[in-house]
Image (cartoon, rainbow, N blue to C red; front, top):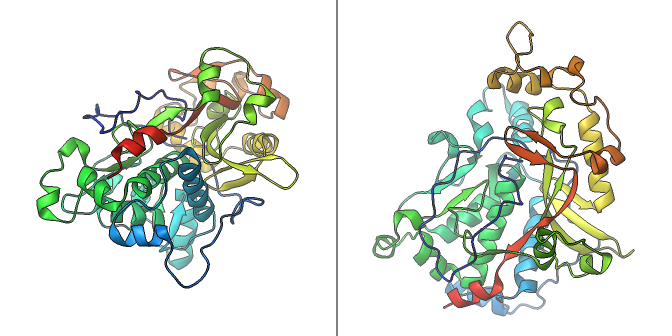
Length: 384
């Protein structure tokens, strides 16, 4: 994940967001695609018959498509994640850069552009991150509809990672709950008269972080997160209060980035997807679907124990930890230093002590204090 991870604290929601402070430029990382398809055991009802449903009629009129409740907002997130994990092509879907590079390379040697590692979308309503030397930060152009743009971003083809993808899903859930018309009036419109009233600080961004996006002041901690933030133990009974669509975080081993500086699995921004037929809780992040807490950590063990890649080496050289002659300028990254283990177990990830690297302290496993989701009451106050 980018170095701003899911447990960053947000200010309390307000009906209409004030001007956000500029967000810092963040650095890359995230998780590879392990599979495709919707999460098993989670069923989304389909509209029957030939008549348009109430949500379809609302969609056509620019009004709210879903209710402003925790359940409806959460289900919209579940549906969005299932769709994102359903696969994609060169011209559709959300892709990690290395997966999209493989797709491009199959079409020809000059199709992939390295600048897309910073983030890219074919949705032409956005200024792409590489155009402004940003990391995973898409800015809506003036004179474009914010509602059309967020739908196009999610449709793809978009090169992103798990954090910006979940943020985009939260933005689209807000849009669905307040309606396209209100959303465009607040965050950007293709009607020149309406767009002229959208302040620059309110114009939509999609980024690897919440601050400065349409959902910046609509996100609140879950009850479990509040309890964890107070230092209280989280019980099995607490976990039974999870609502599908709530957003949490899983950390890999605290020293993962020492072994894999360019690695994709320092952690996972994951949505709670409900329970399967066996009563097991299921989680999904972009490219990691249908995982229990246990199997999510299994994925992290496998990712940690993989050998370093050429991209790890490239990132150490770009970051100054490794010289062109192979000499380590920062001994912590040298496998011979003993600073990090070459191989880990699930127990190692869950029980390793906290470790600070580049100003961030990490501890492996499920981050109960990271839980968050859209504040249904604040969303409801913004509805027309």
